[in-house]
Amino acid sequence: MRVALFATCLVDGLFPDVGRATVRLLRRLGHEVSFPDQQSCCGQMHLNTGYPAQALPLIRRHTRVFRGYDAIVAPSGSCTGAIRHQHADTARRFGDDKLAEAAEAIATRTYELSEFLVDATGVTDVGAYFPHRVTYHPTCHSLRLLRVGAKPLTLLRAVEGIELAELPAAESCCGFGGTFALKNSAVSQAMLADKVAAVVATGAAVCSAGDSSCLMHIGGGLSRLRVGARTLHLAQILASTRSEPALV
Image (cartoon, rainbow, N blue to C red; front, side):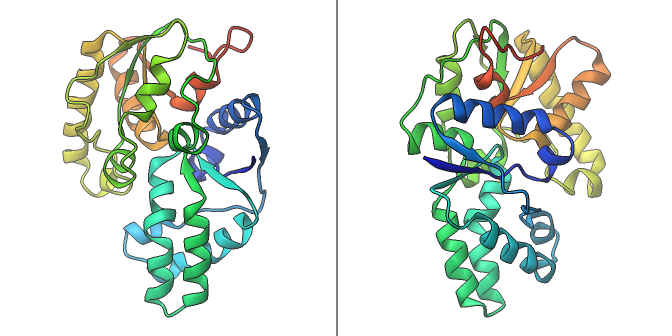
């Protein structure tokens, strides 16, 4: 399958290892993976903070850059959610039906990583090896907007050597929420404290999730406590093998 990686701003700018792991994993599974170098922000930040007009050029660029691929895979539930649920509606809001149709076509071929593996290709065991205790945080957009359900956990349970620990109050938000963490910092920090306490209670060495944004937030909380636990994206665990282990 001819697959394009949509890396997302955060992965491209701050967590490139997540993008590399996604490519390594998909290629190991036999896919032809490309990274269109003209990609940019999907516009989610603009849309969620009340600037839809500023998002429109980004939507146009996104539909142009990613046309022609069998599938577009993103290591992010939130950006996938924006592409699938906001792009076409925003185009129609500004009277651009042609763009809306193009955005809808892209949306039907856009997947969050666990969706692509389980739903689009029918793979639940990717041949990963990760001999560590791990807990998993289901991010809000992947859980509530994309409804990926147990797909990430299904993939993790098949990883050789892993010890998977259930996260207490797993479905509670970590408190990041993009600009929410800036505009409502006190509430965000209180929510983060609860999430970090839940992670620590599992005794896990690693907290994983499908969004680097939430992992950045949780990872900051864990590092300040100095409890020895760290965060790692789902893609990094699934890409880990005996010959190419993820660094923990």
